[in-house]
Length: 282
Image (cartoon, rainbow, N blue to C red; front, top):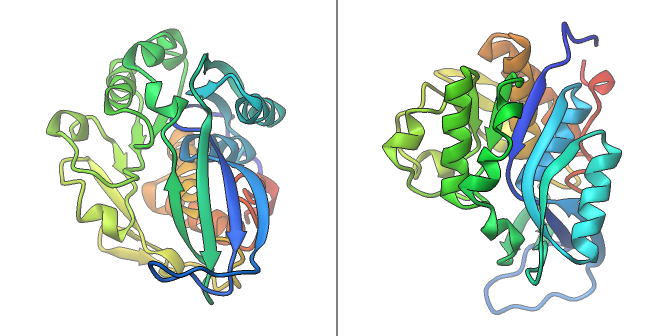
């Protein structure tokens, strides 16, 4: 699949190292399960979306923060290998890089995730504004809520100033101020997040997991696949949707392609390793 042009996306967000245990099922509160397989993957919603967008054919600038540790250095090296601009992936001294503890289990391979306090929590509006010149050259901006809200607000304001779409994946869910929602071109919540974040975005696409997505009142079904790991599926969808918007596709066409991409991602282990390449999404 050949893109009409190679869009430039700016992605503002988190970077984590995912420490994953595969279980036959997810544990109940207070329960210990033994014997799960362990793996370590590159993750974090922002970095996941950056990798997904790069593999979708976009030129990507990533704005985030990491610690001066092995996890942070590995995260930056991994993004660089994907061809992502990491000039604004800031190093923080005496603050750990992001870490997420993830359990995956059950027939549908659903997940439970806990994220530690880290360098992600230090990303500031000033860090985002330092990349102002890049916003003037970009086609779309993407953010999530695993970094402080002032950084997200700054990204939205710079996107508005540059006259380009701002796509917000409102996860983890929280109530959002009207001044931010007014600047959102496209919001991509899941069903739970849609009930929390509030209204005010220009357009909303609700992800429904294995049932696909809702674009307005239109439900776009997801291809039936055998899931292996659903971590990062929403990030894959948001990134591919943003690339489609940046390329000038209609929201419906961008969503259809993004659903196909996400359906491939869930058949593979690991958030970033599982992101499909453009040639795979037909």
